[in-house]
Image (cartoon, rainbow, N blue to C red; front, side):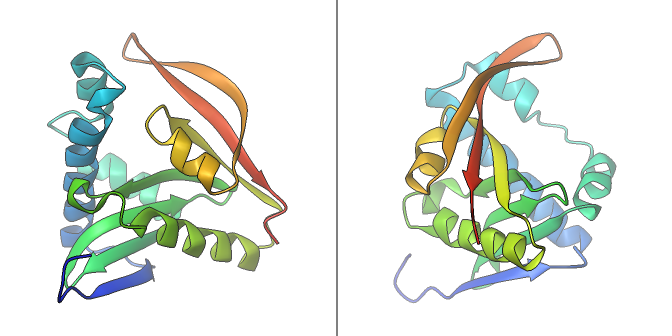
Length: 164
């Protein structure tokens, strides 16, 4: 973290439009920069297109538990836990990667999963995210090839068992 910064982590129950737009911008920018080492530009553009459907995001996010990391008032990371124990998204702003923000968000997600009596959590990690999740105790269950808009993506079904 930068000197003088103020990291604040929280679960958000009612996401405001401004926060949603900030999260979508973070999602887009992170994928387009951090993931470019592991995916080609066509894949990145399908995964994180310039025009993102806000109403679709609202609908999906409204069903899940949302966690944010803020530096002062700027969202620098976010995570999402679904009721079926899936960490659907966990992203950290490109300027904050490597500063344990993702680890802190993941710890909040795990605490929520414990509170909800989940025995395990899982994710479908990108090639880029796989080492992070492995370092946090997740195990690869299988390599997957997903297709989105006729474009194939490699990711990994990963689980962390016995979180309690």
